[in-house]
Image 1: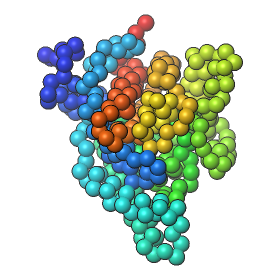
Image 2: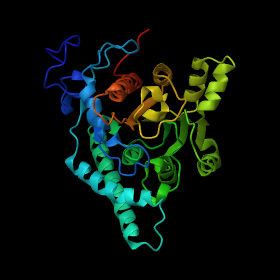
Image 3: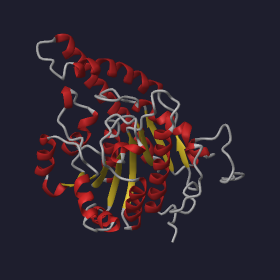
Image 4: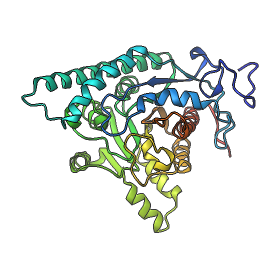
Length: 350
């Protein structure tokens, strides 16, 4: 951090948030995953990492909650050209299946397209898993920046292999617990089903802000018993209407989590005024300040945030509206800051 002025405008060659760090001296490495192959409504999430990076230099590094969260070092890796290539091929195949509503029986061409999309989704999982494992083995904290919500599956597996049992704190408008949605095994709408079915080290999932889900998802999560707790948006709203404070609600959420936690944040967990171009916006949702307050309670509770993912940030198609990327990069900074607090790299302000 020599010769770095946190009050100055970012240098032309600086990295994410205008910081000077290289990977070797950064405690947190951000892994961009430009992937949206199974997007079934709005698109653009594959452009999220680049948009967040481009907007991030506009942030003021002084943080009102955490003392100098930039000092431990934050570095974003360049995007993988190979992943972008896989995404194009997988999306071409997946969109054919999605257009047919997943009905591929007795339709050889669509069956081939489905197989292609599923195979490439599995290849992405392996890539994310390898990259995450390498970073964890190097002593780095990993923050995955998507892309759609299918992208962090490999990171969850790598975290499980490295750390053993942990909990997922999942912010989202959706449960994402569908079984192979539209026939696509690695659909963005199936990430939590896949994680809970295949990674037993995820001992509990706590979902926050969910307000759009199907009967099958409801029954699947209910059948998990104590392994799953859902704080639906309507229940959060009702509690607040009845006079319960956000601190009380947020404390109840944090108290449901085990000692080790991975935070998975779909941007559509926020009120859609904050992320209007995300792929599947839903009325309702959380305010930015509510999220930061909850993350702060979690970090101060003595729990360890192992890592996090931020997904489904989609810039405006016109490219002239940076609002989604602006909110996304500020949320990314808060995730980094509170993760550093939980790991002892930074201290919260009084």
